[in-house]
Image (cartoon, rainbow, N blue to C red; front, top):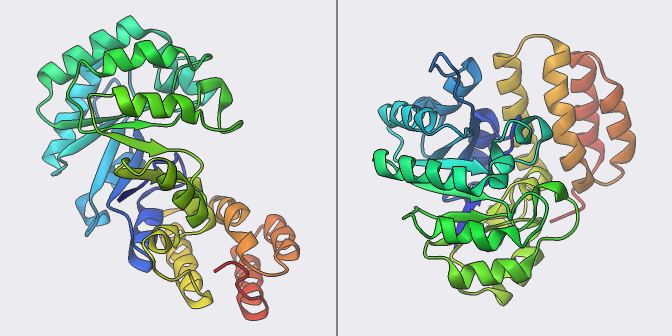
Length: 313
């Protein structure tokens, strides 16, 4: 089974990916949060840092593009190939309203004819391998039957299916009935994405779908950065590993970002997911949320690691 780290905007950037890879490993592919082509045809500062080869050493990294304009996708794909990338992912899954209202991400699924024309031009003119990450549709899962007919026209590296519609965001439960049908009818290799938070989730999924060859997980890794290693039969993270993981992240953000407020925003976001692995974590979460200075934050983290134990193995 192949395991992929999902692209989560603002979270799984190169600093996070590098820390996961260095401390725990376990992933076959690491997906870069979406690149949004602009009118100037240049990468933003964040995007460039995310794709630099020296920031992705030792990892099979797949950049993701968010656009509904074929010329933008093709131009960006060729620029990425100059950095050495051999595979590009198309984002048809982002449920964010700011993205969807512009007809991008999951919003592109609302216009299947235009999507078909987009895919035709992209696959006709782009020499690099392309994978697609998709949802089932905008409002109704039944939309996916027609979308799958469109996807089957093109030879993709793989079709990554998150079996929810856009309006679900991350609520409700994945539509496994439709995923099972897609698995049987897809002419492309299929990767599953959705609600793999624990080893038990993974085992339950693979028992039902033993024929699936790859699974993507994102939010589960935020709560347990050793998840991929554990799925492969390895050990859970111990306190020393989690401290090293935290320190790599924190040092990276301190190096790349300016201002305590910006740095602490990133770290507070991490702790909303990671804190429950510790005993008596709630009082530390409150302190972390209130922290406004890095020096104060550092003392809280020292106390947490010194006084509490890992409650989840």
